[in-house]
Image 1 (cartoon, one colour):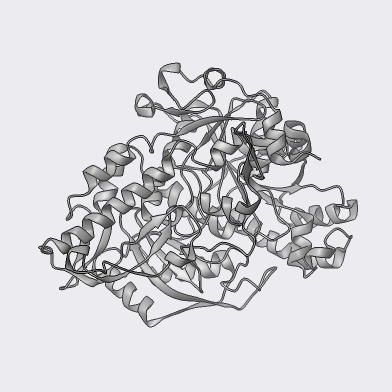
Image 2: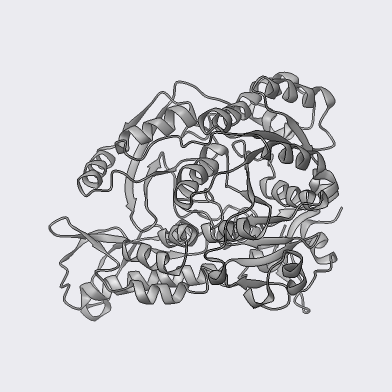
Length: 554
C-alpha cells in the first residue's frame, strides 16, 4: 500500500494558473510561488459580497486511533465538486513542530490530500517565518528599550511577551536571557512559545485586512510598567515594522487537492497547540469566490469548533450552514475503554460506552450553537455493520444522520454520501447563536463554556488566575471572548477521562490577555504553549535523496 507522500508524488499537479481559472479567480490576483503555489492579492475583493455557504468540519475528542478531520475535509470538498458544485476548501497551515515531532505531516491522507504536500508541510510560502520574525522583532525592541534607558518604566519582572520558534523544543520553555555583562542586555527570565501558539498567529488569523492587522498589533500588551499599567506594541512604536514583515503573510495561499480543485491553506492554530482554524481572510475570500466553502477547526468540537464559532464567527460575522462531526468506530471504542491493540475486533459494549463522547459533540453543535450537523464515520474495512448501525441508532435520537466517508481510499467517490447530506443540511433553516454573550463577567463566560460545552459541574481558580481576572476586568478587558486552552483528549482537563465524564471540575491555572487578537486566554490543567519532541520524533524518518525527493513525511 502506498504511503500518503507516495500517493501525492505520483499524482501530477496542474499549474496553479489553471486551478485558479477553474475557481473563477482572475490571474491578476495571483502572486506566484513557483508552478504550484500562489498567494492571492485580495485587496480587489474587499467590497465583494459573500455568496458561499459555510461548512465546518470538526470531530470527537482525538485519540491515538485517529479520526481524520483534514482527510474528510479534503474528500468532502472534492465530492461537492463532483456533484457539480462550485466549491473551495480552506485549511490551516501545518506547524513544523508537530511535523517533525509526532505527526510527520498534516495535509490530509490517502486520495484526499492537498498538494504540493511536502511544500505545505515544510516552508510553504514562508508565512510562519514572517510571524516568528514579527514576534521576535517586538521582543527585541522591548528588551532594547529597557537596555537604552527604559523611558516607559517597564517592570522587568512583569513582562508577558515571549519569543517564539516554529519547532517543538522544551529546552526553550523557560530561559534566562541578557546575561554576559551590561552591554549584553538586562538579565531576566524569558521563554519561548511555539510560533503557532503566539499572539501574532492569532492576530494574523483574525485580521480582516492589512490595516486591521496593524491596529491589532498596536494593541498587543507586552508587559506592565511599575505602576501596573499595560505597555503595548504601540508604546514601543513597533506596529509599523511588524506589519511590514507580515504584509505578504496575510495574503491567503492557493494550492490544489489531488483532484485539482482549489484549496486555500492559510494561517494556523492559536491560543495553544492546534486549536485553531485557518484565517478570516482565507475563509472570507473563499466565501466570495465560491458557492460552498469547506473548512476545518482543530481537535474536538469542544475546542476547535467552539473557538471557531464563539471567536472567529463572532469577529468575522460568519454564519455556518452545516457542521460535519468526524468520528471513527475505532476511536469510539477507545473512548469506551478498549486498548489500542484490540480496536479491530467487534465490541458493541465498548462502542456503546464510547458513543456518548460523540453525542456530546453532536449536542453542542445542534443544541448549544443551533446548527445542522451530520456525523461522518471515517470508515475502515474492519468496521462491522452492527457497529455502524449502533452509531446510526444513537445519532438518530438527536435527529442527526450518519454518513460513511471512504475518501482516504476512494477520493471524491468515497465522499458522495457525505456530500449529499451536507447539501441537504445547507438548505435547512437554522438559528445560529453563541455559547455566551460578551457582556457577561469573565468568570461567568468561563463557567458557561465548562458547563454547556464540556459538561462539567464547575470551575476552580488559582490565586494567580483570580488576580489576573480582577486586573483584566479593572483594565476594561472584561467584555472580550474567552479562548480556552485545555487538553484535547478529554472533555475535562484530565486527559485520562475518556468518553463523556460528568461532575468534574475544570482547574484554571492562568489567565492572560491577548489584546491584539481580542480574546482572553484561559489556561487549564498543565497545558503548554511549547511542546517537546517525543522519544522517537518523526524527524528521524524524514529524508531527502540526491534528486531532492523527500521521503518519510506522511
